[in-house]
Image (cartoon, rainbow, N blue to C red; front, side):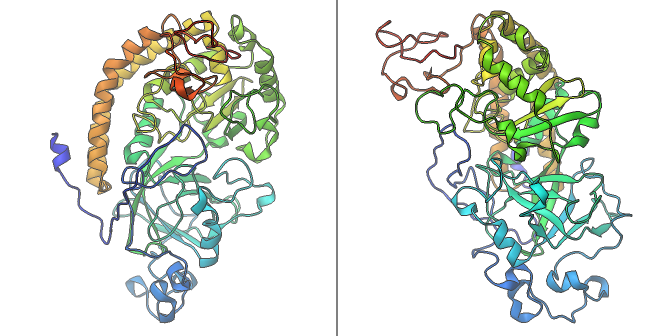
Length: 553
C-alpha cells in the first residue's frame, strides 16, 4: 500500500461523520435521487436532527431562547467588536475587515478560500422544498439553473462572508446572495446531517456585484463522485486540449451545521459569458449557450418507456427559455442544427451534411475524451448534463458538465467509445466520420499517456492532505482511482482497436436495445448478440438478439 494511504490528515475541528449503509442499484437514468450508502453519501456533519425546526437552529434566534443559533444581543463579537445586525442573527460568522469593493480574493487561483453562509429559517425551508423526494422545486427542466424569468422564486442567504486564503486573507460580507440547491443524483437537503450542492448568483440582489470577478459559482459536495473526480477530470480536459471550467477546493461553513464546522467543497466555474471570453477557443465570445437534459433532435419521446423512442413527437429543448445559460438566447440557428440532424439520414454523408453548423473536430475529441475519462452521465451516453455553445464563428460545440460521475465511478466503471446520442449515431453510421473519430482518439490516447494521470492523482492527494481536506473514505477512493487508471491505461488501446472497423456500442454481454444497452433478456429476447455488430430482428438469425434498427450504429 502506498505511504500516502497510511497518512491520516488532521481532522477539522468538531467534525462528526455518520455513515449510512443500504443496498444500492442504479439504472442508467436521469433525475432520480440515489439511495444513500457509504459510497454515495459517506460524509455527514452533526449527530442528528433536522436544521431549521427551531429558529435558533437556522440562525435567526436573537437570544438564548433561539437555541443553538442564538446569542445574547449585547454579547461582543470577535476581537471585542460589538455585533452588527448580521452577527445578532449569525453570531458564529466571521467579522468583515474590509469592504466588498476592496476585497481581494483569487477564487480559482488558490485552494482554501472560506465561504460562510448565513440563512434564515424561512429561506432554508423554501430551499429544501422537494429535496426529500428526489429533487428541488424548480421552474425549468434543469435542477439548479439559477436564471428565472424576472428573477421570481429567487431564494437567498442573508449574508455570505468570504475569507481569502492565507494568513493575511481579508474578510468581506457580500450580503444577500441568491442561492439554489442543485443536483440530480447528488441532490441533498441542507440540514445538520447533509451537504447540498450550492449554485450562487452574487448579482441578483446587489447589481454588478462579483466575487473575485465571478458572478456565478457552484459548490459541489463531492459525495457521489468523491472529492477527487470532478477536479481531476476537468483538469485533464484542459490539459488534453479541450475547454472546461475552472475548478478548485474551498471551505464552506453555515449556521445550519454550526459555526465551527468547515466542510471541504469542490468549487466550479459556471458556464456563462465570461467562460467564453478566456482564450481563443470560442473566438472571444459565445453567441448563445444552453444547458439541458435530453438529445438534440426530436427523435426522443417525452414519455419514454421500455421501447425505443419515436421520431418527431417531442418539443424542442431550445424552446424552453430556462435552458438558456444567459439572460436570453436566440434559438434560430440551433433549431436549424436540430432540424438538420432530424432530416439527415444516419449513414454515409452525415458528417458532410452537418459540418457547416457543427464543429466536427471538436466533437470527435469530445467523444474520445468522454470514453477515456469515463464521463458516462453525459450527452453522448445518457442524454444528460448537456451544455451546447454557439461560438462566435457560428459553429456549435459541446462542453463537459457535471463530470463528478467519471474515472471509474461505480455507476459507469467503464464507458464505451460509441455514443447513443443522435449526432454520435449519425457519425457511427458514416464510415468516413467514424474513421475520423478513431484518428482523433489515437491522438487523445497519446496525449493522455503523456499527461501522466496517476502522477496527477498522487499530487492531488498530497494537496488535499496538506490542506486538511481529506475526509473519511477518501483514502479508499484514492486507492480505487489509482487502480482504475492503471487498468485503463492498458485497456484503452485494446478497446480502440476493437472499435476501429465498426463501433461496438455495448460491452460486457449487453446489446443495443435501440438506444440503450441491456442484457439480451431485458430488451426482447434471451439470445446471443454477434460481437461488434447490430443484432438482427427476431427470426432472421437464431443466434442473434432482437433489436430495432431504426437508428443504426
